[in-house]
Length: 313
Image (cartoon, rainbow, N blue to C red; front, side, top):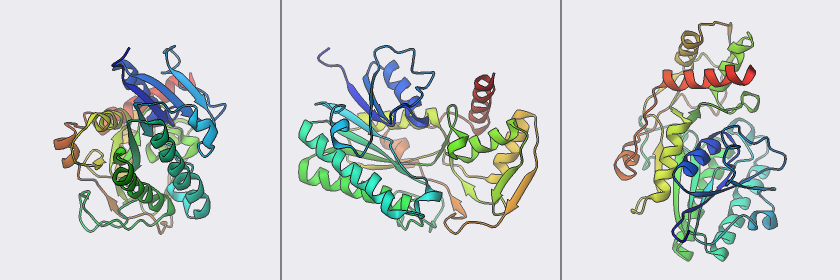
């Protein structure tokens, strides 16, 4: 079809990517996914025979080039590091994430891809906030290499827009949670805590549990990312979260109530890169992207818990 929208999701086989892919497919997009080799494909995507899969290393120029097409919207959700591990090897963080993304931008320019939507980090790029909730205009002083690399990619998106006219939007995403989040990879507190409860193991907390974060249901995050891909205004950076803050202790209490199970909670010394409070101001996303988070924390945690139970069964 001549007017068919084409989308490539880098990291589409992952947690947020699988939510994004399903929504794009249901909206009539022709979707391709690029992800690492031998990845177990998410159960919610195997039912779509029209979905194209490409496997390879993100930093491999040749394998990535096969997936990129003219007039394609590229969704960049790939990250080779986590905030807690990125400071251990900043060189790897830069080589794999920042340099890999620069090669991607060159490929998009050469192949005539239409636009890139980059999933940045609302939890790390700001560092210790000067005000809460945090607007997009707030100072950016990351305390981990992960956040620095995300911020650098945002700057290069702007540069490629100026030099080459590349359309781009960066989504500064809060802490996503929901179905298909993998606790083994320590992708988020909600998944890790639910897994501990399911297996009757103690929940381990860095600090006293008072650290406050903004948690966003993955399906709501995917809707915001799609809205950003269709956006044609002047904005290029948007916070996406729930706009509300919850402490780790509050998350634990919610999990105990929803699962009707309790386990021991163990507290240890805090980590230097954990800022005390991070809650995003999402008013720009509301007004410019016409987007609103719809899922309450209790509803999203319940969905994640039910998925874990079904997966185990």
